[in-house]
Length: 327
Ligand code: MEV
Picture 1 (cartoon, rainbow, N blue to C red):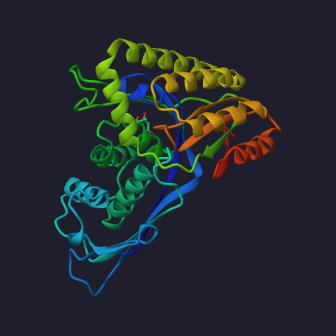
Picture 2: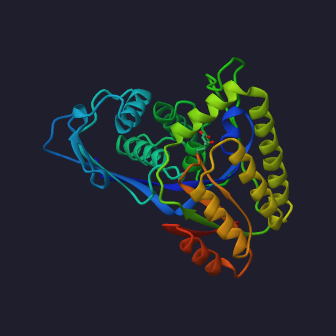
Picture 3: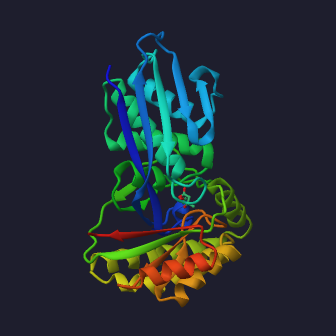
């Protein structure tokens, strides 16, 4: 069996985070500058089932059967073997690495899952289509995120911009079962540039998603108004992108950031970066992903990228990425 490598990009949510968990649309795009990578190398002397897991970034070097059964890598591997009906994986080493910052809203967990699922299916000689890769990664997301919408695994598995609507089964919980989300691609009629800036503060999505959920349980009407307002913004954004008016996204970003603040997922550090971007020529800015830390995004007018990046760094950003969409 030959060695097999698969990679998966990071992602950024442009509009609709949190509201998407409650059935509103969201728009997300892959971030190709950062990637997770999984390589499987056969170990010709090993016994079937002897799978060594190496993840130098997190200091992990263990055999698969030494890991907790709830470990994300175990869940991803078992998802593949059970789908493909494989009882023993031919002896191998799985090496995982990633340049995606963890717990920062760039989808590091989902990207690792997608890369591992693809590499293992390929190694076993049964490559999986994107839809199945995404569905398996979603099962892993559920272990870590409680009630994920599924947008992260979708945009990362398909590696193209998506307009995503979760389908909710009726009931008191947003964690619908047997979901089949609506996943639409859309045309970016006129390219535009987004700057991504990291607060450097790690903020697990599970916590912010859980806090929003508690807020929604306490004040359902207020939260549902916020979700609906974000949904309207996201629909307007899609029209603007498809209609060739990306500059209209700026004020909509500012508005979406305010609504996320009312939901309790902004933070002084995120607000500082959003303000710095707005003051240095960005057409608009907002937090992106779970919030409280992690990344924010800004819409750059042509030629203002360097100025905005410098201002974001002065305001405390630990890292900035300039990404052009639609080229
Ligand atoms: C996380 O990238 C986006 C959230 O909307 C959670 C989710 O959709 O699962 C905060």
